[in-house]
Structures are given as structure tokens and as C-alpha cells.
Length: 348
Image (cartoon, rainbow, N blue to C red; front, side, top):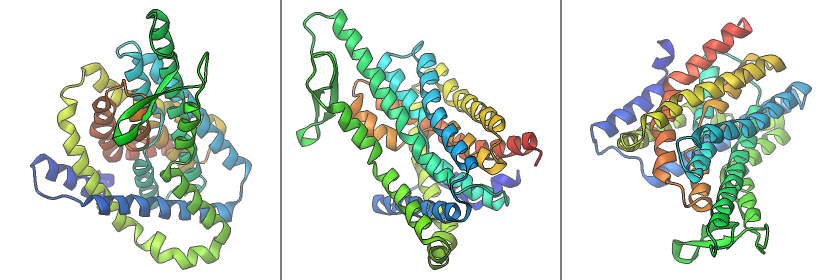
């Protein structure tokens, strides 16, 4: 119960309540964008400062390796299961959403660990960045395979490896992808967008700056990346509470099976991450963050790319599940639960 009294969690609840009662409370879009930029920059700096102190040890490499493994295994497992109840395109989009990660959930988890005085490695911010793109790339490949199957079954159809990308005027234009008979480069475009996404560039760039400046940089940036962090996180979670409330009506249109997946899927992913972390001997704090990352779902990075990469998929499906259900469950209940489980298993 004490974990629910954290100011950040309570501000999230306040935002959700304001949205549910249809209050006129709102956060200007420019402020929301600034807050997300601040949190990523501060998180990257803190990770870089911590990594400068610890160095790139075998334990660090082990955690990063597990992060990449989970980023591949989780979306593939999700797709295999979701394909039983959804079309190939929707299954790929939802699997990408749950195979990728939520930066806000991760930031909230780091703040929770600090409030509980549980140490964690700064390199886990790099683990988060590594886990964001593989699910997107796998989803695009699965969608292309689905297009190929549909084209093979329909004589005279369009080129089999067609990928939608933003067209002129904000529309969507089909571009052939490299493959049998295809001249294009669209998979390269997807790779470019995945790896040069502003979220990743800012996070990794700030981490590099923190790594290069070390203790001197930490002292200089303490008022920015330390003292202000909690308050900024509370403001951002207030806005996320409002956004969650706005997405709740769309949940009523989803099937019970998908709602169950949005709850049980993340718990399964968390269990998988916890087991791997225990087998690899990952420290407790890092294990919590790895578990939180595996259990989270993307509601910003993946929808932004998948909207154009897989236009056949229904955006209301993967956005409403991740933001309307999985995100609040992880923020309010998941983070404290995963922390308690790790502490019991690790004997903390």
C-alpha cells in the first residue's frame, strides 16, 4: 500500500480521475513534449554518470545481452499467440507494441527503485534503447510475409513486398521493398527510422555525454538531472493519466481475449525476464528494470512507425490496449509487484 502513496503514482491517478470526470484540466502539447524530452535527457545523463563509475563489466554485458534476447523472443511469442485471434497485420502490430518498451514506465521504475533505496545500473537505460527497435523490425518483416502470401493467393495483385510509407500531403504511398522482383529500399527506411528515432538518439546521446563527463558532469548537472527529476516526472504522469482516461472508451470495443492478453501477456513476459535474469545472476535492481521493460508496451515509438509501416493494422487496437490498460496496470501495480517478487527471489 505504501508504494501507491508515491507522489508520481498519485499524480497519475489524479490525471486519470480528471479525465474520467471530464474535467477541463489539460497539458498543452508543447509542455508534454518538453517533459518527455527532459525525462529522456535526464535519464540518459544519470545512466551515463553511473556507467562512468562502474565501467563496462561482464555483468553489464550480460544484462544488455538479455535485453536484446527478450526484445526478439517476446514479439515472436506474441505474434504466434495473437495470430489465432487476429489478422496477420493486426497480430504483427500488437506483437510489436508489446515487444517494444515504454520509456515512461521505465523512468517511473527507476524513480521507484530510488525511493526504495534499491541500487541499479546506469547501463539499463542502454538496455531500454536496445529493446525498442527489434520488435518494430520483426513486425515489418512479418507484415511483408503476410503481403507475400496474400499476393501469391491473388493473381494480378500488386508487387508482393509492398510497404506503406508517408506520401505527399500526409497520405500513404506504397513503395516496393527489396525482395523477389522488388527494386526498392523501404526496409532500409524502416531500419533508418527505427535506429534514428529521436527518443533513442536523445537517450543514447545524453548517456554518452554523461559517460564522457563523469563525476564533474554529474556535479554540474545535479540541479537539472537530479533535483528537478521527481517533479517533472509527476507532471508528465499527470498528463499520462489524462491520456489514459481518453483511451478507456476504446477498450470497450475490444474482445475479452485481447483484454486478457493486455493483462496476462505482460505478466508472462515479466516472468520470462525474471527467470532469465535469475539464471544469469543479474543484480536485483537491474533484474527489476529488465522485468519492467519486458512487461511494458510501447504507445509512442511503435505506433508512430507501425502506423505507416503496417497501414492494414487498426491503430485503435494496439494504442488502446497498451495505453488504456497495460500502461496504468504497470504504473500502479506492476512496478511494486515486480520489485517485491525480485526481492523475495533474490533474498533481498
